Length: 522
Image (cartoon, rainbow, N blue to C red; front, side, top):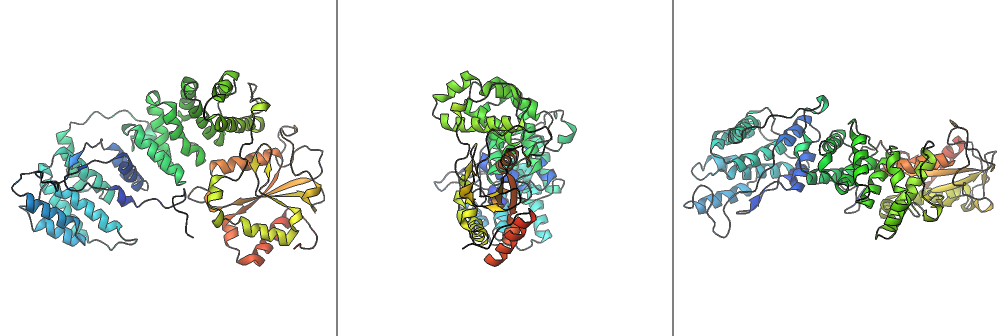
């Protein structure tokens, strides 16, 4: 199924695209974006991720002569042949041809040609969905050429070769990586390794910059990649760099944890965030509320921060800012979470006059993907099965959650016409004895409200098993409000072939709840 261009669910770039190399005469250094792609290429291997995190930052270096006649590294007399060899390497059509150009021109090969060769090898391997296998002898010969000549490399070329070799999958304990690493250490005396926690000895994310870690966090959140190793690395980075991070950076680092419904194992994660919120809550109001929104999805709201954001001084302060509406919407959601999930909270609350609907309409991702949604065919199935007067579609219920389909059901299980009933349950909900199930609220209304929840593919993390934080929050709150939820998973919906099968599927789902209705409408 084709995805809309630029959407969060669109396919990430090939890992080999991270090994970008400059053109002739242009400086090359792994920018934050290229470093991000290198990191993501290693996410399946702890050893490769470790090797990347341990590499120091690379300074810009020149990878060849410029078209304006600049002298190439190694002397200007061979500018023409050297530049010609670089073009041949960049245009090589196979790994064997690449190796042949290097082996047959020993007098023309310069240090900067080896990163060009590695980059071209990455392009050749990544240019096809299923690249042809490369003979092991070819890789060994290329490795031997680089090993033989790397003593003449400068430190920048060594760093470039290290990054590209890791990206291409050369083993970290192989001869090429060992030789390059030895030359790197020979030129830069190693620093004594810091003491690391036992569970984090393989990766040292504190050696990366905040900008790279923010890009990594945004990439994971945007593409719904619930990668525990990378998320733990972000959590550890946040803890280690706590004193240097502002709340505006922290809000971006925390974003994927709430969105991907992932509470890290890092024990200092929550204490660290509480200290940051206490330190900077008054400096950046929107960042503070964004951090609390992520923690709300994780059910980890700190009482001290809630006291601050619900205080009259904070509310008055944000009321005059350009982002007042979005802050009030987030504060309304936080107030709902306090009402439904924090019975022990005794601090200030958002005044009723300041509350606004949380999500008054379907979320942006649902609107953008409406053509791929099952909502229309499910609506038609319900219309033919129940009759259009017995369900409501896209109804927003207090305190502002949009429901996919809502049914009103009598105490005997009969589906009632919606127009004869109040479809809304009261908010705040009437108190019920502690420990009573959320799906069985205390109410004087004999009619039940059943909400059919579409669980589309993009409502989950990329692995398809864990609901995104916002979806899990909505379902959790609707259940606590007293609505009976009937999930319709995308795997089951996609397996139905045509409307007749879908109607049979919906009939089974509704009857399993004990619902009954009259003749089919339509």
